[in-house]
Length: 251
Image (cartoon, rainbow, N blue to C red; front, side):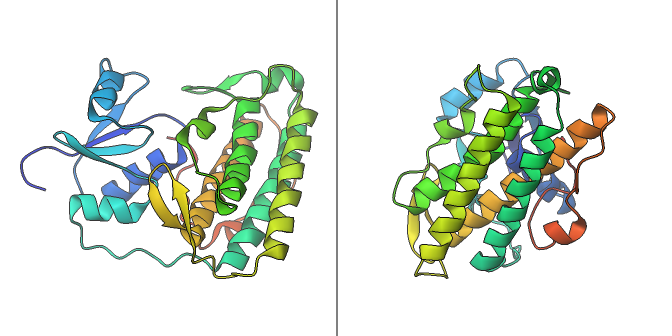
C-alpha cells in the first residue's frame, strides 16, 4: 500500500460505493474520494483504467471493482476478516421482506413524486424502486445460468410506467424468486455463477443482492420522509441484522 494513493471512484446513492467508503474509513485506510458525477475528468480516468462499473478502488493504473469485498481485501493486501454471510434461506427471507416492503413504499408516492430525483443523484424515485426489483431479477437470471451484466443495473423503467406498474413488476419478481427457491435442490448455493466481476458462488451473489435491495428500501423510506410521509411498516434493525448494509442511508 506504499507509493500510489488509494483512489475510490463512486457516485451518490450507490450502495456498494457507500459501503466501500465506510469500510475503508472504519479501518483507518486513507483514500482519495472521487465522486464521478462532480469531479472533472473522473469518467475519463475510469475509461482509461478499463473499469466497467462502480465503485472502483484504484492504485496507479491498477483497479478492482468493489462488488466483492474479498476482492478489495486482496487488492489492497489487507489482513481483515469479513463476517460470514447469512444462510441462503435467511437471505431469501430477508429479500422477500425487503421486496414486499418496497412495493408498499412505492404505492405511497404520488405520480408527481415518483418522477422527481432525490438529492444529488440523477435518478428518479420511480427508477430507484424499479432498480431495487431489477437487482433481484438479475440475481434470479444469474442463478439460472445467465451472466450478471453491469448494464442491467443502469436500466430504467419504461417511461409510461406508473407506480402501480413498477409494483406489479416487483411483485412478479418476488413470486419468481420464491418459486425458484422452492425448487432449489442445492440449498447451500455453493455452485458458481458468472458475473461482470468474475465467477462467484451463488450464495455470495445472493448476499449482495439482499443487502443491495435492502439499502434501496431504506432509501425509499428516506425519500418518503423527505416529502412528509411515514413509511408503511418500515424496515426495522431486526430486518437488517446480519446484512452488510452501509451504516448510512445516503452518501
